[in-house]
Amino acid sequence: MLCTVYCMPAASMVSQTFAADHFFIRYDHHHHHDHKDLRRWRSRTTAAASAYPLFSNPKASSSRHKFYQEALKTARDKFAREISFQSEDKDVSLAKALLYVAAEDETFMVFNREIDACSFLNEGINVCSSSNAREWDSVEQMPLDGKTISEWLSELDAIAKEVEAELVSRDIGCHLVEVLQAVNLVLFELRGFKRSPVLVDSKHSYLHLVLSSGCGSAILLSIIYIEVCRRLGLTIVGSRVGEDFLIWPQTTYPEELFKVTSGHSLFAVVNGRCDEDPRSMASDLTGSSLLGLEIASNRDIVGIALANLIRFHWKCASRSNLGLMLTSPLRHANNADEKPNKIDKPNVPLLRPQDLKLAIMASERLLILQPHNWALRRDHGMMLYYNREYGKAVQELSICMAFAPEEEAELLELFVEKLHLMRLESSWKSLGHTASMTVK
Image 1: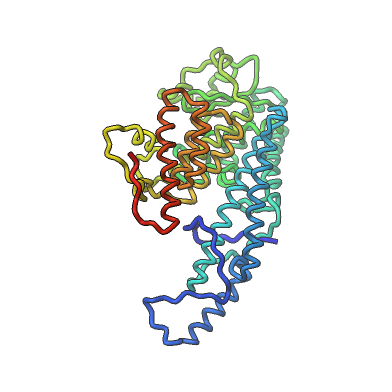
Image 2: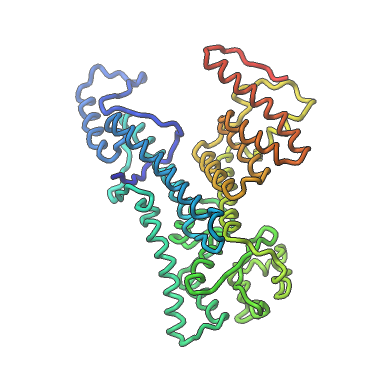
């Protein structure tokens, strides 16, 4: 059994193993064989071993590392099965797919936190441990903010039942407008759900955290609305309009949605009143124009959520490199006026490793949905480049060239040639050579 331990944020992406009887000698202190300090240190590490099994012994570390790798694979496999093209789109559960995304990302972050905790403990630094850690030995039992995947699905069931109770208490039938009004009341008034105008926190980007906090991105609130209505037997459809994703009930009388009552139309309330913003393309919509919009499939909606997740984690990863774009190196590779580049460390900006890896993981999932999207594959390859996985970057960008327009393919070809040389230099340096290679 494993337990989720919440401690200091992850600072390293590299797995390390520490034995309980190993300690570091600090060269800025004079120990003078202080056996009391050593005994105190051993006492702390012995007590901590039960909280952090990676810390206890190499065998436990190896077993735990294997478990996390299996948990990551299981979560990814379950996500892939949920959105598989072998099943009909109507059978894809938006909630399940995104909860599997959260489970995979949380497994990755839990493992990183545990590695960091072990590193701190080996240095004799006290690390907080959770007294209410929840044991788990499978993805289904893994706690996501205190609840399992099935319990978060039950939370959506509970919201739907609250809507039904509201309809019964007011002796309201099943007229479309009345049901929507009840859903709006429960979600936006009783439960207080609201949109976050700017994504600055990961809790706005994962379904379970939005259900917990009541605040999230527009696409995740739309997904919650769709899932609640589905449980009520009401089909909600959606479409991307400009920068917005808008939802509405499937109906042959869309004009009803735009009738204004209490100052706002039902369509406005359902979509966070973005249609009332004159800067939004949604402000021009009417009942008749709504019928002409292209309806997003369930897989499309999952894809939009994943694309938002990629943008969020890339923004976090590149925070210390203001204005850095994924495709910036492609422009430099094609600039004939630039001096020959030395392939050296400063040419690849240092990014936050955990956020970069989370962006790559989201991109991998989106590629399952859109394997022939050349722009997505290009961006994925560039993230691998920033993560210094040059071999994988070459592979992805080479595949991308087969789908990309001719002009883009030429840019990529020049960059891939440089990546090949970067791989050679990595091998060169691994043999103990220190001189830098020059790309001409």
